[in-house]
Image (tube, rainbow, N blue to C red; front, side, top):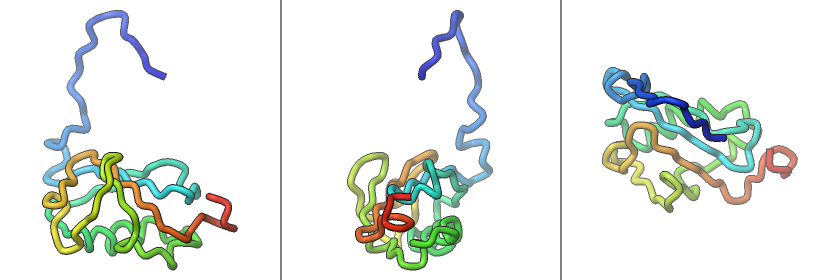
Length: 119
């Protein structure tokens, strides 16, 4: 639900990339795996490779989910900001077009959550 201010509402956002000391926020969503009910935010280095992101950030972040061990994230279907996306595992996040507060959606065909029920 949107909110409309009753006055000229001006503020300095606290989540600007300049406030993250060279790091950036990245949102990740794994549909049908609602142990994580919403996209979650991770702090990443823009110059890390996409492959390193998967191995060092994504896999540990979702390790509690029963499907995590069977997920092939580098062979998965990806979207970047709701557009189809084919990541280059050897290129940096920045070179893959992933910037501050981007949203990655990863779909893992054949994995439909716990008990195949989408959670």
